[in-house]
Structures are given as C-alpha cells and as structure tokens.
Image (cartoon, rainbow, N blue to C red; front, side):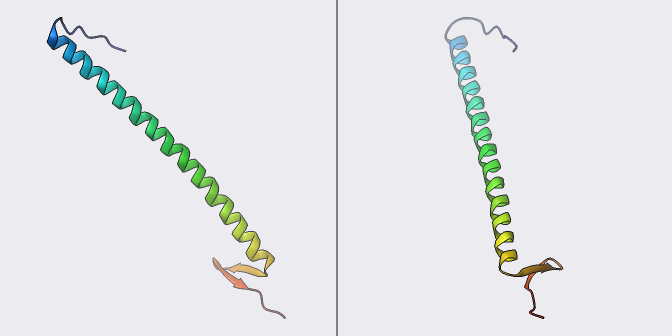
Length: 76
C-alpha cells in the first residue's frame, strides 16, 4: 500500500473521504465478484448432476447414443 500526503485542512479531508469511499466500493465489487464465482461453481455442479441423472435415466429406459443423439434401442 502506498501512502500519499494530502496536506491539511478541508481539501485534504475531502480527498481522504473520497479515497475511503473508493476503497469501500472496490472491496464491495470484489465481494460481489467472489459471490458470482461461488454461484457459478454451484451452477456448474448442478449442471453436471443434472446431466448425469439424465444420462442414467435414459440408459435405464433403454436408450443409447448414436452420433451424439439419444435413440431408443430396437428390439431384435
């Protein structure tokens, strides 16, 4: 962290208040971004689970994949 001498008086107090405000905004933005990342990870987990359950259900019902498409197995 770098310290800056802002002088004294009302102007210095105003600049210091602005600096604190900017620092708080930055911290809030970082917290928001971290929350977005956490939600993204949860959504990725939900998607993987949904895909696994869908695949298991289709396989149990007699489907298979053919060239990337799910197809019902023929009764031979």
